[in-house]
Image (cartoon, rainbow over all chains, first blue to last red; front, side, top):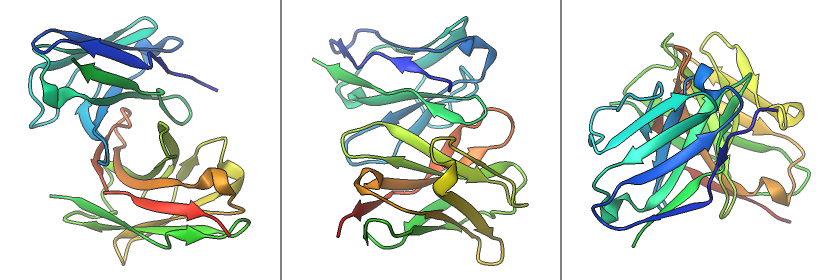
Amino acid sequence: SYELTQSASVSVSPGQTATITCSGHKLGDKYTCWYQQKPGQSPVLIIYQDNKRPSGIPDRFSASNSGDTATLTIRGTQATDEADYYCQAWDIAVVFGGGTKLTVL
Amino acid sequence: QVQLQESGPGLVKPSETLSLTCSVSGGSVSSGNYYWSWIRQSPGRGLEWIGHIFYGGNTNYNPALRSRVSISVGVSKNQFSLKLSSVTAVDTAVYYCAREASSGSFDMDVWGKGTTVTVSS
């Protein structure tokens, strides 16, 4: 079955750029989206179709997808960005990455 | 805007069938632009997609759960439902319903608040 691999955790200082990666076989050939989930809350879609932001999502969030890796970039990271981030793609079924815990130190 | 609300028993006994319903407001399950999905999250774990349904009744399920899962849609009640049979403790999770794009990107832009289901005798 298809798998998406994410680093378990990423740490970043406030104001710096956070990079979260998601890898899977020929992931660049598929649409990838990203979710942010804060403790006790439902996931929120922050990126869809590889690099599009839904209405209301700050432009600090951007993403790309090529080859075997999709990348979520958060510029000017804020304390409020501390959350779990999940990538997702489709391969005969919806597949989620294992999630990356972003800590803003 | 579209809102989703999960409902159902919070406690299910082992070997029994878990049944949940997702009520849709502000939109219609008959929209041809979306699938209607179930996702779960075990305590302290990541997201696991269970399956989805199109308003016409076409379904896709997580291969790991396919033998135990059934998703149905009730157009007249504007809701869709999940049944998971032969549950065990590993099925204890927060269960979410979500709206999923049918355009080929399968992103989920609207989520319910989730409902906690515990499997225990």
